[in-house]
Length: 83
Image (cartoon, rainbow, N blue to C red; front, side):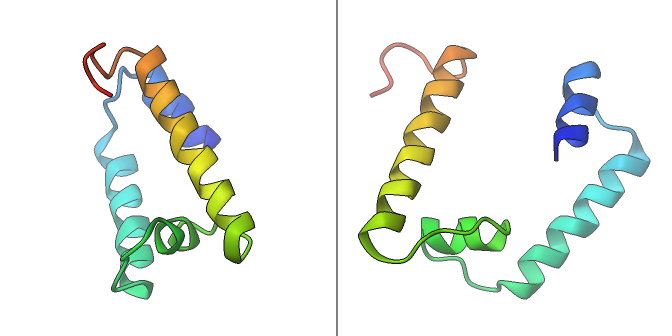
């Protein structure tokens, strides 16, 4: 994933057709294994992230989502009015 992120950053978010096709195949493979993603826990598990069970796992998920919003806000993907 780090390599993929570097390619996106170096090309301003644009992928070559070869890389885009490979990414789509991987994504379809993940979605094919996990036909139904109904929760953030399911989502992270589909990505291969290990999430602890119970309240500890809920806390991990909460912290990851909060950090994702902070990162997006820092990158100015969100306006100041988003709450």
